[in-house]
Length: 288
Image 1 (tube, rainbow, N blue to C red):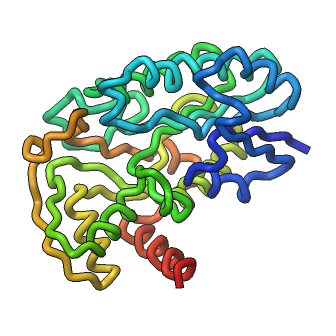
Image 2: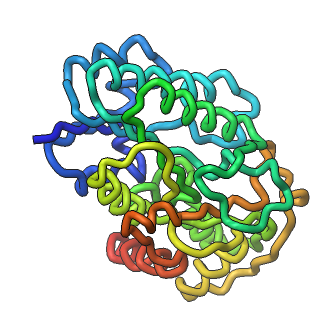
């Protein structure tokens, strides 16, 4: 029976991935194995003896990374490198989740980005994640890097952020006017769909880089509008530019990922608005 170790098991992706994985699955939290503490990685993995190591953990505070880059790089780059090396040492395959934020430098881009498209991050977070990809692939030839975008999952509904859908619903409940950026194009992705596609891709023995997102493209403003439409909420919603929003970290103006390589493996995810609808139905069933 395959033994699988999952880091970041309590995050929204980790919690949707765990019940879908085959074999003997060992969930690990940061308290048990910390990417920022590399000396513990090899010892832990050598004790557990997994056949497959899946890393759902990351430093993902995009704006905060601008003021604490050392921590972002220690977790997203150096820690990932050390985890890939430890996996290689014990003969395990390694799966690492990355992000569309490794793109963004090409401000005129308007067609989906493939796995071999030239990266160009515009933030500390994006640069640290790109370095993590490259270091992992160099450290372990049995590495699978999965780039995704705009994750949201029911398990993230009570967390510390990172779930745009829940943020919009919470703010709408406060009855205040909302202003949302309308010039950043991406593909919001359900963690359920990502988890299911990941398990299917793992079964093929794939290595290298793959893009996995829901289908289609939208802006954050258009996503917010669709959230409120499907939730039958009347909200004072106004589109603004990225310049007006003035976040500490720059975001890509266009980071829609081309999932054609994944489709070549027979794996196709639903449209982003259909996935959103399923999420909202499941959310209502959980909250009553």
